Length: 240
Image 1 (cartoon, one colour):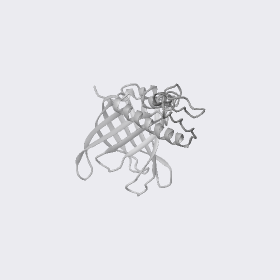
Image 2 (cartoon, one colour; image 1 turned 120 degrees about the vertical axis):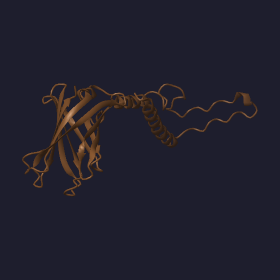
Image 3 (tube, one colour; image 1 turned 135 degrees about the horizontal axis):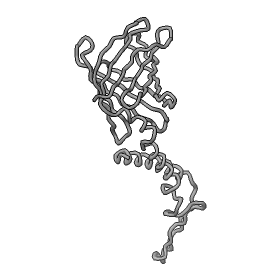
């Protein structure tokens, strides 16, 4: 586990626990500690804890074992990559891609462009980072550059993806599940559409592997009537 993350997680868990325990202890009634005999200060006794409470240092004392161990266990499980992350392994490597896209359901033939992509593990196998380059697009004529992040959230038990590029100011965020039968990840989300102004344009994506050397990413959106249509298809072929 990343040491800095672990320190932050442990510190946060400990802080929350300490605050909760402090407030709980402030409300508990306690007995007045016995005052030491003024004539015999060397025989002064330690105050006894209230009934039902264990002396400090014994097993079960707040802040030790029990609840803290369970919290630490959950933090560890949340931050540790597992089998679901390993399913993303075929994405790693250098790829050449063919990008086909449709502006609307009425467009029969897609626009086509090609480019290159590289995907690699980051943060000790927790996420895959994708870097994409392509030919000049748009009125400025600048080469296309994009970046994506892919991972699996152990708490949500879902795959998550984030995409952003130099052609827009927004980001695509999607969550989804692994389909064992189809050997694909199906995800969905919402995006702001610059053409319609719709801030909640729903979309769906399917990432399907064909062995280890080919992957097809398909993106679907909704037309004005609410009918789904294919807006883009990206075919990745592993670079030789």
